[in-house]
Length: 422
Figure 1 (cartoon, rainbow, N blue to C red):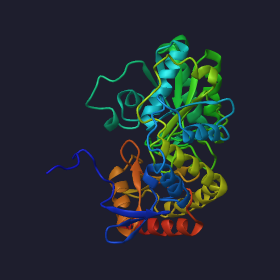
Figure 2: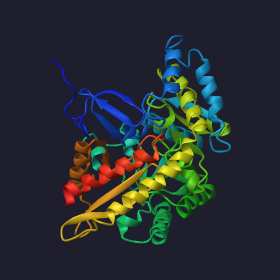
Figure 3: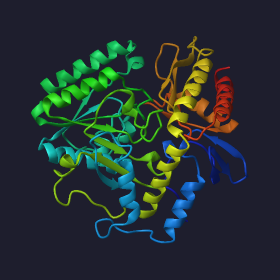
């Protein structure tokens, strides 16, 4: 009898039978409030009727039209529609299936376009699990250990993680930019550096937002040295942070954007976007793939974009996100680190909120975070952890979440924290 790989570890014991909106229903019919959204994927909620209808209609006409063999209307229509929301000047798209694939496509394009070998990443980043993407990932050793050597040509610079360093944001930002300059002077010369790749909010790294001074600093250095700025919007894009793109908060104009997750409400689809002049520098044959730009996924993505716009889900993410962060901070204020443990920080943007647990001396406390995440699950609230030591419990509900559902989630969260911390 075959079974799933034992290396796959489930965050909850739930066996999902169906899902709708912000709820997942198990095989016993119990409703679970899903504040994971499939790791930020079900942006329009589970099984939004318009997404379901678009996918069903497409399945009946064309499931797979391999896009280097034939073109199809959903791919062409999605490409045109994305032009309405992409950053100015990023008018050329290449579609693949996953975030990791899109990150690798962006990296390949950057190296080919600049004829430079090196990529600078930032401490705490997560860009994927494939060899190239894992080589760019520094959020935890579990993503990059045991199958080295990894891809060469990667240099790591600090991210302005103020809580980690115990500094204010301005000090952390000044340090990060100064160390980046030192890196360019000592490890990877600008003439050898193809790109900086950065997340507007660290995802697996602990839900740490960047800031305007940092993104502007990257943009200025990239422009001065002919380095491309790649912004990884896999988790932060499509309204998640209360702006359509996470970098919209920080005035950090990208040369290449990477998007996935919320793009198609659960169907596998990802993309990179760049100016046509830049995309044309990709070498012949370097872009392609069997399943990229799948017709059903593209139809679902068009419907997703229409729902986000028609139902004003970006605005909802901003409003509900403010309520969520306020509520999480109210809970945290009752559990400051005591003689043993507590909540050290609450942070995030929009519907991307993290609560960091620490020991009495301020060290990351993954054990307590795991206990609270499990306690929340018992109460019917599905959550995930992140951070290098798993010390952050993250909340990423679908963008359709209501004020009442946020209040309900906060009530379940408060109870789960009390179950563990008393």
